[in-house]
Image 1 (cartoon, one colour):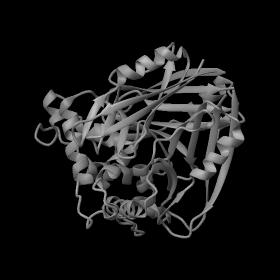
Image 2 (cartoon, each protein chain N blue to C red):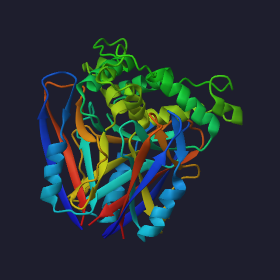
Image 3 (cartoon, rainbow over the protein chains, first blue to last red):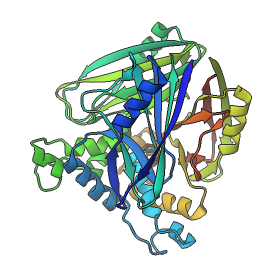
Length: 140
Length: 140
Length: 140
């Protein structure tokens, strides 16, 4: 069994933003030499997501508006008890649960085994500081 | 290490529907010859889900009503910017994020290692065309 | 390839509660002898979740309030058709979909490869009876 571990570092300027990290994941699969296996990609921070969906700006606009409706940003200590700790990012912890922490993608014949529109995104909900994404590949 | 890859093809008549695909996943585990390992099952399309829950029609009715509340179907370009691309399925991209893209199930002693009520479903949110599900099994 | 399977038994007194199970998962990784691999942790019941987030009581309070808003407890057969079966836990099946069934965590150099605040929680939404969590580790 082969394994390969890689960490990506991201610096997102906005509070909420989605970044297509598919090319970096494909690079990691190449580096691993794995032909048949599984590739885990997860946010290492708890106010961020890794998810698979469409690389379409209108959809990303829609996701942001929708997540803001489901879990509005509110730094006050009234709405979110988490913000009584001095944090202002309780909303980001909620948005991340909707979009998910991780994806697991099949590797087949040395490549990510994707459907026609699948792309891997890093979803940031509390940006403006350095964050990391973990890639772990196992297989043969 | 052994690996096994299989793709299921589904044709769902309705826009939103849930299909129990547990028997097909069990068949794939048998075919793989894997006794101890992991089984990834994911939708290959971005307006569909694979999830694990109960095979109970009342619950599926409830899920459909709830997902329609959280992300209503609306083909107009006003509510969802994604629908300005000529698509009408922005709601389906949202519903899929709630229900998830994939499940990873343990294989123990050659079988899916399930709790008493766990069943694997394909969740379609933009049906009436052919879709695929990927099964990837690794182990020994 | 090595593999290790372990089941945790939990008895939650309240209907909804979150329990940090990270120490038990770390124990299982030690027992497995796996240095590089993947660790699946999933709820074996369909009204419970396993998720990764912050061990902060204010945040857990916020999650409970938010999940109750998104999918209120209502044992009557009117709101949820699932409760026409004699069950009263339809809300719990919905809450579990928001928080997720499972996490997959990388194992690197014999340890869970975590970001600074990541902790693994069992999320119970229909407690007051015995439930199980499955840990499956594969690697080398």
